[in-house]
Length: 68
Image 1 (cartoon, rainbow, N blue to C red):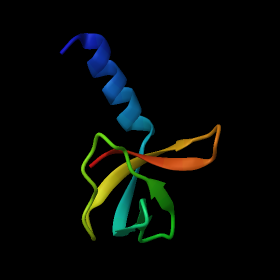
Image 2: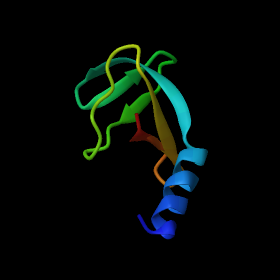
Image 3: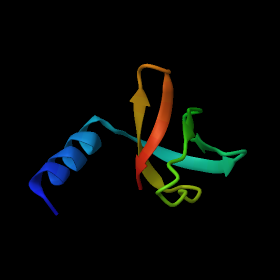
């Protein structure tokens, strides 16, 4: 993998916050702290109790899944 892609992945992960999945329903990931997170089509959905990472999109004020 080119170094540019590796650095981008590391930068994205470093800004992401960990969440614990409570359940997945109606196209949203519900977390144990009450935050709604929009799933990423390219990633598998987390299972209940699983830790995943999400990043806040400041322009629209929504959280989006970035990794498991």
